[in-house]
Image (cartoon, rainbow, N blue to C red; front, top):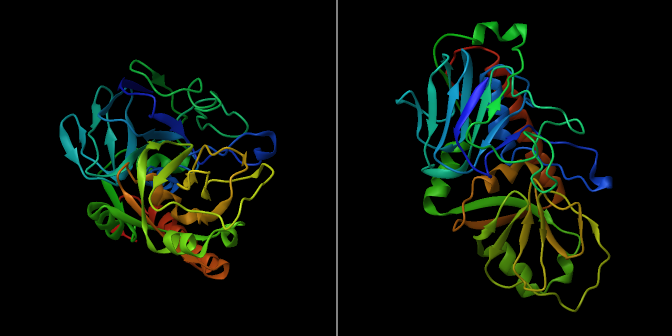
Length: 330
């Protein structure tokens, strides 16, 4: 069990989300940065979809109520176990009574914590993720508060070798370059053209593909409102409300695009200029307000090919994580 010592609404229990319920108006939810949560779970020998904590408000502090192994991934933040500094993307063993503190990130927006066994909150529609918009899942459908106690599931038998021992770290190949982009203030995300892409003016399509858009303060788990050159339609377009997904880039009458994210509405009527490919959503998850975003448009065949490459890298990462206590770069 772990005890929350300081927290806030943006800090929530998440797994990889609930699928198959869009038809009844239930969004996917889940970790905004699925890569980071999956890697944290791998470092403690959990299944990739085990529930952990997504942290978006800092400083964050907790106390361990039992001996266990934990891992911290995601943003480049200061991490300390009883005052002893740990690197990011790292795992370690903690003993009962020790305190973990995570400071505001130097680069990135969200940190992920995984614990051996995973957080044991009830399954709701097949997931332990918190849906803040719907007020269910996770711990009572809300953000974590000071004094909350989170139970953990018993570690699997195969986790015995991970329960104690030295520290283990990883470094996904895409991370150093991404952190350089964050430090420069502008990230690149890949996207494919949306269903209404051709209905926008030529100037608007060129602006979307070539200019940077800034993440505004209207940014949360539902989506990011961006600011930049206004995007205009060639002529008024009336659409019935239709299905949308995380990654959908909608353009309301203001002309300022909105990228739907983990708790995206399941339907909407704004025209869609593009759709961010799933393997790049973690990049948006780590973009704070003020970060500029450039969209690299791919044709569908290239997007599928690049997704296959990323999937192979993730599979290799999972295989490497099965070798306990071997620091590596994938």
